[in-house]
Image 1: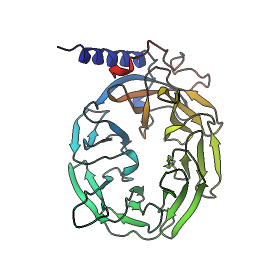
Image 2: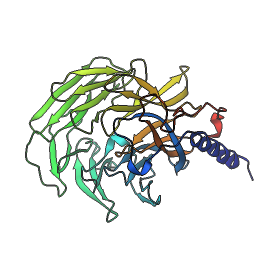
Image 3: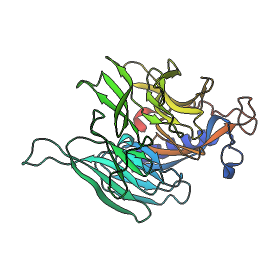
Image 4: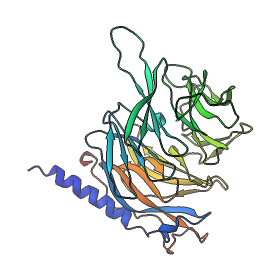
Length: 363
């Protein structure tokens, strides 16, 4: 028998032990203390092995019960990470987190996918699918769209438009058009050239679109994460976070000099989590998880390992974080500091120590 699987298990066990060495958060059943600062991660465990199909991203349901895992051709995987890890897989093509959204009430998951071309047409068509976890059903919600729509949760249903933020459509869960109210909106990005280096970001309402950001020749990563209060949106990352106010369109810059990938709001809206990577021009050397305060702009490092940690997703209750690392999707509890001292809840620093480096070819 080859020694490779054994080495993989050994590396995965080492990674779990690294993060388990962190102090555990007190009062987990009561949730994180209000206003507390995140200081680290603890009790990590492998949630989904993706060696047969890479994880493209994660999306928690609003009640934090379900986790949707997008894969590169392996379908959409639904799990209950905080209950019994029961897994359900639904057939789908390549689905990233920007192609998925939960309804605001958490009862349905929507995602968009490409339809295969056939000999009767030269343009690809698209559709929006719907999964209802309660009944484990999967159905087509909108079929044969001429452009790649991205569903966004809005009160009472979902909204989507073409790739330029035009022709918006807002539907309830039965597919009936919603009334045009100011509460219906989403953030949409459009690339203005085929190389993806010039972009616009719009706030899209039933009445039309409003520019939030217009950049020529930018090399930034779009994030478009709307805050829990739906009053701000992260519209850009790399080499900083750019957060736009959705009322007046003014933007504020955070974490300058950090790559700020896979940014996620804390459920209270006072912190943003992100991955920061370093490279040598040819490959990624390190990727750790950080948090930045939207009140003070201070940045905290939450992990310090030789493992590439990316594609993070924070549960809406603020207790857990899912991220991709060695072998697949990992879940860990978030440690908070409620004392204002910058320490973990049990008085020790909430950040794991650096340990021996993983061998990259054994991931």
